[in-house]
Image (tube, rainbow, N blue to C red; front, side, top):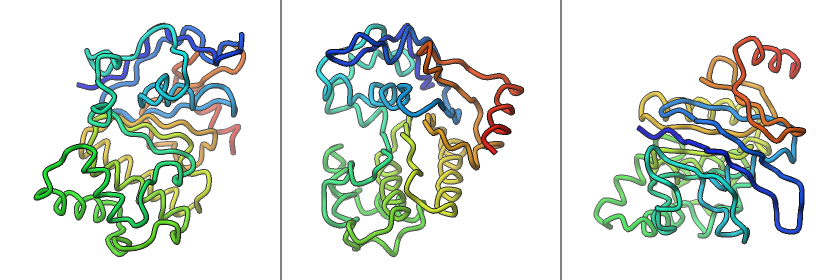
Amino acid sequence: MTDVLIDHFTYEYPGSTVKVLNDVDVTFKHNHFSLLTGPSGSGKSTLLYFIAGLYPHFIGNDALGGIKFGDTDIKQIPSNEISHSVAMMFQNPNQQFAMDTVIHELTFVLENMLVEPAKMDGIINHALAFCGIKQLRSRVINTLSGGEKQRVALACIVAMDPPVIVLDEPFASIDPDSRLDLIKKLKQLQVEHGKTIILADHDLNDYKGVIDEFYYLDPDTHHISLLDSQSAQHFFDNFK
């Protein structure tokens, strides 16, 4: 069971006196698809970076409160092992690629996770097939479209096979068809493979009927609330 527990979590950036997140206390449930929304700059990305273990490592100062994957405090997980627990997809896929071609990127990901070389081909083939991009195997990443790059990013996550997947507005620069297809792939990962999906987005298209929980980060209080069905419907209606 991999609930993601955010316990009285408070954070402000270095040099600021404004709390980006203020005493956030929320549980993202195991094997659920959770949508986190709120205005741009409200702190959604900041929380995801902490869940993914990127902060405080790359930011300098730590937050108050805690984050747990099930019973395990994230601070007890060595930084070189965090990818076994959680993986992240960014708004700009170019932020997460280190290699030139798709196959080199996937191989690099698995090497970092110390996967046995004999097992790599099978894992890579499965990840490419799941994301529908077997034909991109040898392509140079910089020549791909935004939608293709995000499919490669998702294939890397599928290859990593972590129990928790967090996504920060991952569909901002792709076409509507690619967006819908990737949301369906995420739902498949949740339903068929037991993944815990936490996705931040302010674009609410295509999520109705897909997500299990709808959370709102209030830019004034910096708290996160779980919306009931009526409140969630209100957000969907207003977005249309």
